[in-house]
Amino acid sequence: MASSTYFKLCFITIFFLIHNYGWVSAQLSPKFYSTSCPRALSIIKSVVNSAVLKELRMGASLLRLHFHDCFVNGCDASLLLDNTANFIGEKSAGANINSLRGFEVIDTMKSQLETICPGVVSCADIIAVAARDSVIALGGTTWKVRLGRRDSTTASLSAANSNIPSPALNLTGLISFFSNKGFTAKEMVALSGSHTIGLARCTVFRPRIYKDTDINTAFANSLKLKCPSTGGDSNLSPLDTTSSTVFDSAYYTNLISGKGLLHSDQQLFSGSGGGGSIDAQVRSYSANSASFFKDFGNAMVKMGNLSPLTGTNGQIRTNCRKINSG
Figure (cartoon, rainbow, N blue to C red):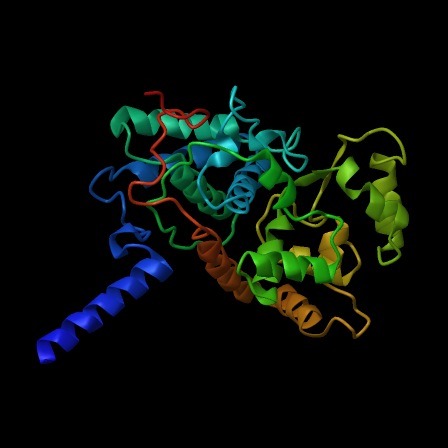
């Protein structure tokens, strides 16, 4: 009787782990490549550092690739796939086309890794590690990247068009969007801090500088010189007007001053007393960068675990831009 009860408990435990977390052996681990490709992380870091040294903006571009990959059907490198006869890739989505950058840097990492560890390191893991190393290269925080993802064999243009948050979203829409991905409002505010680095195109922030009433007047006027009401769609402005090439908490200080570049950015701070805990969190991060760094790192670990392909699902692409043939 005791033996029967024991085996029933074991079965229930195994079923629970499979149903809720997948096979234990398929879980991501920071040490996934410690034996199969021990130089993997150092190679990725070296390429990131070289790319960022050559162009500081590249750090933000590589971080953005990770966001735009994970938010569309999980962290599976589907974003990197070029168009084929069978599907139009995610690079063609409205939020990505003529906007995403850094694909050649990912290619360089993959090429070097294939030379020393052919068929071992996934493109999905490369994106995840490159994002972390880009933040570090620009003076930001670190976190342990869990590894072991595999690569998708397809992409979804429709999913990319509907699963990347719009810069036009209001606070309610942002909270709902991130909640649907499993994030709390607090984690949403922390992840939004990725906009402390990088640039945005005029076409993305034009509605804010000409229509929003919660924007700093002098800030709006300065932006209108770069972004006229018509034309100049590809002209660029920093998401963080204070320090766009340094990963710090100035993004939140800018919000308090009404200097968020995107409508969705400024939605995180109302300043009218109606913002409640969201306003308080922005003030906290502005005053305490260590708090922001900690929460950002934890939220990035969580984002990196969005529906990864593991075990025998997917494949390890030899070329990140196309699926393996045969």
